[in-house]
Length: 425
Image (tube, rainbow, N blue to C red):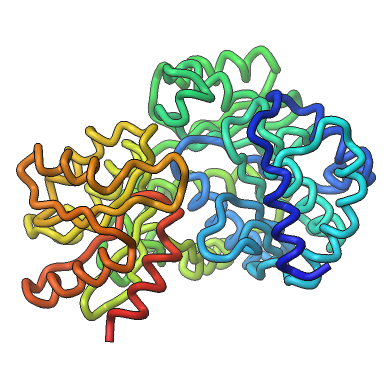
């Protein structure tokens, strides 16, 4: 099996309709020997901040000398990003081997697995094959019925925060979404709650109490940002002083505070993680498309904020770094998001907006999105492609001397990156 054949097979099982539940993923796991039972997990759910939290926790554990598997979604540029060991993507060769191995078992199933279920089991096989010490496991969607929730136990369960997103699937209130995310809570596994919403917290803590779970809450009161530039962020967190974080964005110190709380819990559980490893991990962590500088001349920043809470974080970051200066925005959005609210927030910092339609069936048209910005009094162009949007934005930036911020769906990132390489000389 070639790499292209393996990827084609993975995508081919993405059926139009499937009954929600864990039966399929349980059946497939059992067929290949329940590799998840051989692993220790940090299981992470939540609306925004999961990826950054996972990346920081992974980086600190690796610096402490552990062999760490990292499972995240969606991928940004390359499919193999979804499963990594010690910071390295799964190789094409090994992905092909694992797909070849799992395919006969998946094909025999009467109720075929979904794409995400198949990928999840592939990741379990990969991490078990390499005897990972710890796997940082990010939920794909929700928690209760997410394929990753096939695991029976974990070292630590983490819910980073709750906001309204994927409401058609998870529920139309914060409480309903919180109940779905709280589905990862398991008896005997401590829980770290990092969110701020009181209604969500009530639902989550009630579930934790029913399960007799020891619950920790990440506190932000001791967090102090000392200096924030496009080179990094200096901050204090509790008794830890003069920490430096490589990731940009005004929201990242909060994600770091959550990760530090998780590390302290792991230390209580017997994991050996010294302070130098913590500092090195925060300094060296990398996570694409989270207020990432992808060009310095002109200055272009890519941020994957794709829902109201994510856009709030991105807009607050723009204000923090550029004060009252306006920026050029490249953006696209899914039609099922609250895009009118998102456009309103973006309009607070935008001088001009170049709208595109992300490559996704759920995407809003560039013309529709541009009309929303125009209703806020912002000049907005509907561009035929990401390439056209980047080309126009670069031209505008060079003429007016303002930064460019690419905001919206993570599905845009790879195209934006390729277009920047093409049009920035």
